[in-house]
Image (tube, rainbow, N blue to C red; front, side, top):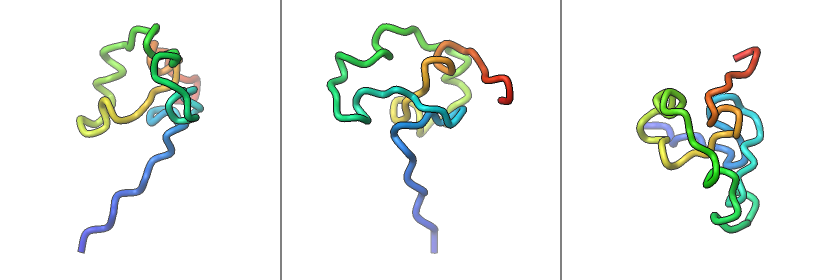
Length: 71
């Protein structure tokens, strides 16, 4: 028997656990989200598992490739 995957918190960045400021997760419209105006660092995307790309929302710092001091 395989355990069901743990659901993820759509308001948290999968890399650092910080608030991702995703407008969709808070009920807004995608066209208002910060992510449409911010280039995402390719090396950051490579850190996500294939099945999480285009499914999880990064925070602005991780998207820009800025790693947290403790990360």
